[in-house]
Amino acid sequence: MASITPPKTSEQLLVSLPAEHVLLLTFNRPKQLNAMTPQMAVDLKSVLDWFETEPSLWVAIVTGAGRLFCAGADLKAWNNDQQSGITNEQEDVVSGIYGFGSISRRQSNKPIIAAVSGGAYGGGMEMLMNCDYVVASQDAKFALPEVKRGVIAIQGGKAQFPVVLLYLSRLILGMLELREVFSVNQIVPASEVIPAAIAAAKEITLNSPDAVQATKRGLLLSQEFGHSQMLFNHALGTECKRVYKGDNIKEGLKAFTEKRAPRWRNPAKL
Image (cartoon, rainbow, N blue to C red):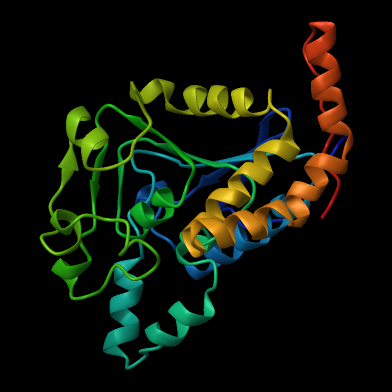
């Protein structure tokens, strides 16, 4: 893969390229359990906006340094704001079109994988619920404790979470609960979370990036429209046009007839 340079970030977000076509973002406030700050949110938006438009990157992984994926909002900073009369929460929610951490309401056409060690709370959980694939450690614990602190899980998770999380604020733990109540795709020992996430990302990159991104676009449209309208918008959309008019469909079909692995190209910019 040709050399690419991501946007500069603060020390609160680490950016790396662990495999071809794969971007890895690491929340880096381990002492604060990776609680989100305005600076980290700015860093995430900058890098993810770049990821969306960089043709050579096909999959992103988000994870957290230390013993927790993300504890959600920085409640100490939030308390300082509230006690000093700064109450801009409603405006901040509406103006932050991509949601918590620039992830919880982001509608990316590219797959995003969450690699979760230790667990996630509040906004951290809302972020990973908007990811396409979740790898979690065996000891992971999940909760939406907002109502226990007088605040709301409003950044994208309300329609997706069961009442036991939203209203009762119960802790979800144990492999059975993780699979049944909360959509964790893969559960592994803590030491294997990042390798497993990278392996999943590499498996995705074995497929045509055009087709993967068009498929995800169809899933996003299905959340917005009924089936007939979704099908119309999807079939005539730019993502499907890129699939059917591009080079990778020719390569995929030719590779099948020649009984070899396809050699995919980076998708054209939309």
